[in-house]
Length: 315
Image 1 (cartoon, one colour):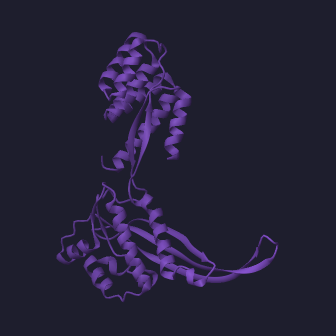
Image 2 (cartoon, helix red, strand yellow):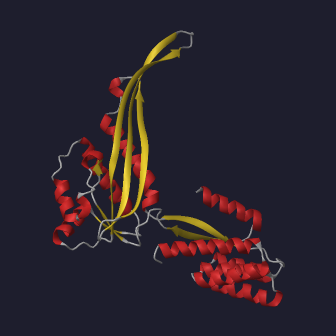
Image 3 (cartoon, helix red, strand yellow):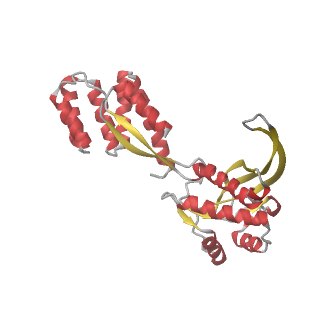
């Protein structure tokens, strides 16, 4: 949201109250999936249930995992597995193979996942504390009031593996702390609840690494040298009505008559808005080179970065 507001403010500073077109942009996940779009989820484990050796073969892994006793930490890891599946499924970018489906596929030797997400809860540190704080009432009388605190610090290591040979493609680690305080022990949240809060914090953090991010940018039309030209109002009306090709044609007509930099600059932005990204990049690169204009150079660099993002997304 801050990026969107910043972009809009900068546009207003540079171009005044010019017409702007909102554009939905998507950037690839921070974690490397090796180009995979079909993702499976292997159950997360714990530091005491490290499956590093077992994951040499998925079928053996599931046999190994299902033989584990579901102690509290492993139950927490199981809950994390479900939450990670939900995060991945929330993105239209991936086709997600659930843990249950992946286990069936491994048993049948028909794995369709191209990469898998897994990891382990590396550590869980629980803490409980009782201390007294001084409290002064309206009459100036001081009393000591108890404060109970329960805390859970959890570290989780996430891994992206190639489904074919389970080699590591990428990894990331998070450590978070969840805490609850109360003036009565009975009002204090349970250890299980505080741990769950910590897991939720981790999931909220890692989702920005696991899935693509979509946000809104604005393509703002530059002010023409002759902004009194009656065609300017017509162009603005066309853009508001999403008639971008007609607006493009008028900008190019003005450019052919006046060689106005802004007219060509705007036409190139409309080329991009209409989805011809390669032509827009080529044209903006040429305009940046011939004019040396800072705005054109900035747009050229942005287009190059977004071309790289599209390639990473397989678009």
